[in-house]
Figure 1: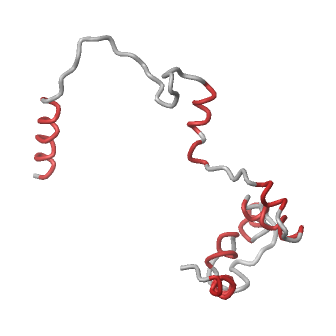
Figure 2: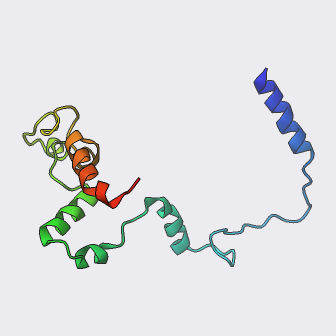
Length: 130
């Protein structure tokens, strides 16, 4: 019954539309001029990817070089965790060695595992984040 009601609502909306007799024109909405360009199409395609382009901030930071490299690897999901070892057929633990509850991957090791979560809580608690 709901579907029939929605159908009639749509029909009412369509009946109220007035179409002009002018010729249709293609307008590229991602450019102020309305003109298509492959450069803008490429940007539009990768718009949702949100690349991390602040590498210079990372490399210029005061952190020790090994911390910078680890962060760079973690952001790119290139750390040698069990999931990555399994893809290459290398021996690996079946579960996280810290909690033995979930599969080991970068996301789990840095954020969702019980021990790292406690670590981040203790580090960040004095700063007062909510």
